[in-house]
Length: 249
Ligand code: PEP
Image (tube, rainbow, N blue to C red; front, top):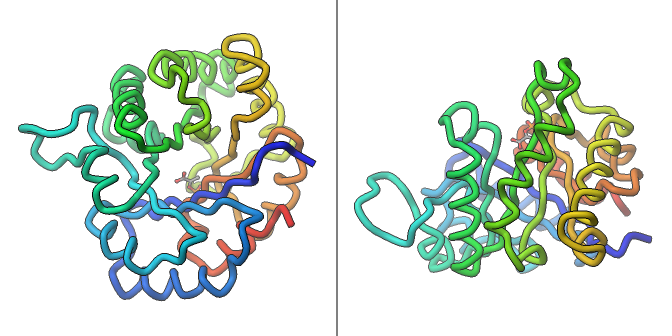
């Protein structure tokens, strides 16, 4: 039995309406019961407040992004202080869409992670290689360079951080990493934590997998020893998200 509590995050991305979110939350309320799994849903900023008001107490709320300072002349941005203020304890940072669609660097991601943690938010920090990097045999190098960039920002706050390994080629493509492919990278990350941070942090930090996880493939992935849960995009908008939340049962 793993010492780490199974963790499932839903990343709704730029999807949903008040009505659709209400229906989804209703499904989650009925299907996700008890506290054997930690469930967090990542909601568009504009719906955070509304979602906070309807979520049951066993499902936590996350923003999908935030800026690296607490306030000021940064039109369109939201700060960790604001996210906390409306009752959301989590934020997703470094998602591949932030990195690759919006051009956010390792340094900006690290600055955001550091500031969010210093403001008391918990962070789902995403890393992962692109297809051409995997094909060039650079997966380990890319993933470890991304996590190394976050290390100073995380500091002593590993207990407030979940690492999401999300190979970019698997996100939204229907091409899930095989349980063996995901386990291989998760073990590399866990080993890095042991060597670069501490054995205790390596044993206690959740490393979750993201990339076309579905109700059908979650159970096999969840059996792997270093896969501590999932970050789920597309399937988090469907009733099958409940099956993913319960895939470790
Ligand atoms: C994600 O957005 O983090 C993700 C993994 O998406 P999907 O599950 O749709 O591949």
